[in-house]
Image (tube, rainbow, N blue to C red; front, top):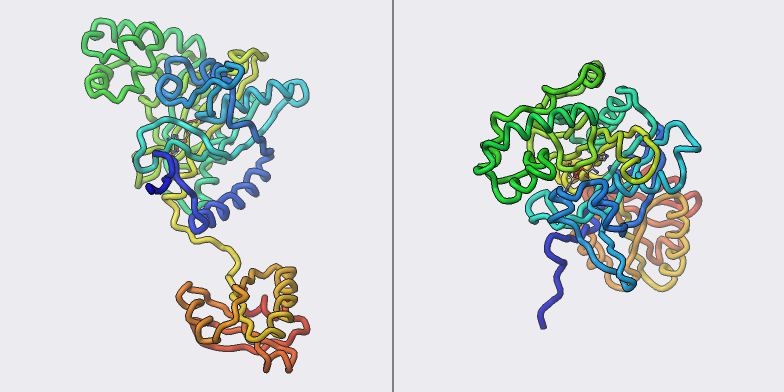
Length: 414
Ligand code: HAM
């Protein structure tokens, strides 16, 4: 019979790999708390309309990549392709805008996009995201980008550059789109079918097209950053200066438009020296709360692609060392069982297979599985109210009495 495999584009995160993820997540939680961010968990399933109204009906994410389905009552639902829209919905639904001036949230979880699977691109992938509501000041943009930078840094990935651009306010965007359409219309014949449609409905999305001929048409195109009003220009300068003052590596990328419709001002992507795909990205979205039926609340955020980040970081986990316990004889097993409970209460990591077999055989298994510490308890040790801890690398053995065992073992192995 054919064996069952994981669905294309989806993968298992096995314990060996997850140790690295968990070690990063622990550091991330601490860092986020220091910046005043609170965790929020939203459902994986949302109304399809939520993403049409936020990410945008014409975007690749909504038209080509979303997992959608009807439930038993015929409701049009979707697996979330990203986290921002859900957090905005939750923020509005829980009326946070009436309770606090500023709300800072973070989230971590799986997102789903029917993308073409390849290195760093999965159909189920994980994002750690941050969204701040209620802040208009450019310092909020700098704060979230700095946080993104330091979060990525805490994983051990340090060669990060922030690609920065500004898409302008609603008025700037309106003016710019007029100029862009004027430029593209006479060249429409060179565009792919999708982009000809985009020209009429959502011209900016032509920048997302992977087609070489469309990219050629846009080579000489006017760019949004050159059509900013004075207020937007000043804001952009403040953000840029703020990032520089922190000593962060910044690249001004005039062609960066991002693939989601909700951005209104600052947009950014975090690139590393080793990969062409962004490891994190985000921006300001001051009109999204209104598009989802709420009051006008300025907001800014980002999401880190954890699958991509974890593939880049070589940091090994700082988890507790494993102590493999070996019991020789029934009496040792009974006493040993209690000893292990005691050691675990002290915060040590101990495990055993409870099997009765020769010591040599146990030690061979431990060696093969690269276990460094063995705890050996046989009849002789039992009679002397002690046990042995053996370092499998140095071959040294230490006799430890039952009395105050936890503290002594801790000093030895930690
Ligand atoms: P995004 O650029 O679509 O933005 O995704 C953010 C990050 O998620 C990307 O930079 C990448 O690292 C990761 N990512 C995206 N698609 C995949 C995939 N198929 N496989 C693996 N990783 C992937 C957003 O999602 C926005 N919600 C970010 C944001 C938050 N903007 C404001 N607040």
